[in-house]
Image 1 (tube, rainbow, N blue to C red):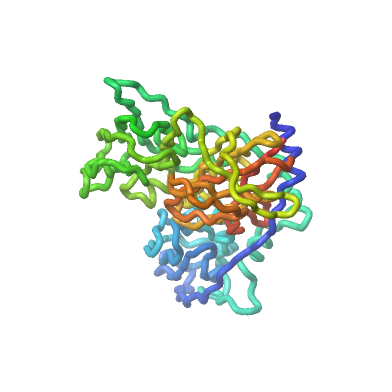
Image 2 (image 1 turned 60 degrees about the vertical axis):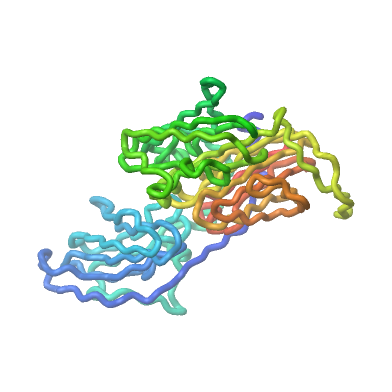
Length: 467
């Protein structure tokens, strides 16, 4: 299907509700010296970060002294705090949930400066504020009922009019699916050694393009996120060699799979960590039924998994044909009358949900750089979904009721119909869709700050395109 045809279908079908959320907070007073001497004692401020707001949103500071910010992450995922000046961006390191950091900024000239979180996507979600230098002598402005929300302030700071917002939204839809470098989840071909399938994975620190012209610091197996897909069958004997070319230790855990204890991939419990420049050999016989399983780092996993060290192990059915019974439903009345025979799967797709250092992503890409699932009218579509982020993501498909047929690799005894499915961190689901309605149908996380803001759609949005 041509890219222009996809864009035409998508432009006519993708529309989501705009929701802006914000949190307010009371700032503490900070005392500046007021002497005008740039060598004066620093003025101090306390800042709180959470999903998705910076409190206080507006900080009033003197122009006469250096500034010190004590930043606490009171949210549930990694954040940063940054002050943007004409000269440079001053920012903290990535701050884990519950941790604190200190940011020192030299004395600044009078003016208004942007404060924000530099984690991809978080600024768009409302983590933006302002530093007013040379104002009332260093007091932070408390948020009251008459104050602006972060979303309102973000809109005013960006200066977007209604026409500009509409234009930005349209440009994003028109660009879908935008081209980026790097594609994850590519099948990894094994070598065969005395009947054993040998797969080789190499972990390395990389730059990854989550959307056009937006590179982020990432970690990848074999240079791709999600890592290469390992395809095996029940009964196969496999050997997985993991090389570490990173600057920190790592290990690999085979999530949901039955493996020998020594190969479970937990540092100092089942193995020593794989140090930089080293390698480790995991070896086991596949005992689990056909389904989707996951491999991922289990060392410094908040950072390493968040930055991309995860991939799929697909235990393929014998003969390559998935066999899931489907609900028999009269589409004109919605009446269900039992289950029908398993249909032939025409389109198969694997979708990793992610959040954290890469932003809100599907297969490590952010809309409009996400890739659609393309089917023909009448096709049966099987979608394997895994959440390797740290948040719940309720995935919603427009225009359809899909059938949930498997959970964590196991077929469900009683498949059920849904159009929104909450996928918790670590969970995997298989869903079947009978693609009978032509058009481009949005498929997205329904936590709306993960998918849309004043600039339009971003993050965890793709589409099922039915030709």
